[in-house]
Image (cartoon, rainbow, N blue to C red):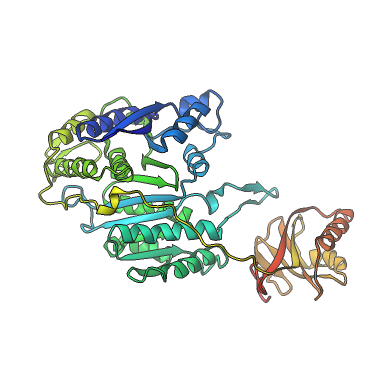
Length: 481
């Protein structure tokens, strides 16, 4: 078999130790790969690259399109971007895939039957990273959910389930509160899910979903979630199964993929030879499946499972009740290599489906005709140090005219006028909603309103145009609206 070029980053902290161990196992296990090292992380940050990666590294990634990455350290202080987020967005790695299994009784857990996969949207949501300080007292972070981005990850989850013999996909959102953003994610899940009748689908609100994942994780098969919820749920699942240190993840796009351990660089134990390479090895197994080498992936995974069964454990998972010998990083890798060709006797052996021999085809999203969009109002946000909503209403009401009328004032999103409660806590962040008096609005109408507000010395800090889409409001309705 022709060797597949892959880009490899040794990372920081324990990264170089565990990467060396993993590459030894991959070579001994018959993986047909040609590693191409790049430098990323702390040393690159220190050289003045705020994203932790240089142009020559990008050249390698775009050439090989496969990235095996050890953990990196981001320096303390502001001004440094998340390398993971940068790579995911730049290369379009929209799907984060995190398999989670329990290895009871060899790894302690209260749940012995966990075998689930979390599929997390990887580019949008609050991780868009759009934040602003608006007043002395209030900052904001924009939550962005797009129709094509959501459809792509939803289709990926159902295609993944179909290719891997999974029976159910559970979508987790908070659309009882965030009715537009999470509501869109849930709605597209239902629309797309109907195209996969052989796969069960269900939806849960994130708080009860997280509680059930912690209490009865064995009930889940494939979990689908927007970015932030998926991040949190992934760590809950890994910890409930036994250890975050055993978890690997895949970040997959149509053209490229990145594979990594989910734990950090652990600088406190770096250089001591005791780090567990399992998380990175699990990521490497996912990588082998991705590049069409399922036989090598299964051989290595089964040798790793047999090592766990035989009680040869690194200090982080060592337990006198189930472990036979405490070993370091290199000795653990040696033990896996010695067991290549063996099968686990108690844990379920790894077997990858025939579909694993070919990569998943690019996910295509549907084209939608543009909706009929009508401008019907504007939310104007103010920095105002007063405390009485009635006083602010008295200031703003004169700016109502024949086209726009003040209908609502909120403070931090809570309605305070008309009919607010004096008990409501208030800051210096206010919103006045001006709605159309019935005619069609133009941008010029809003510019005129803002001009008059500016002439009056009012400190407006942000505006949001209010539209209807095919006659339906494209904005959250205030209480009583």
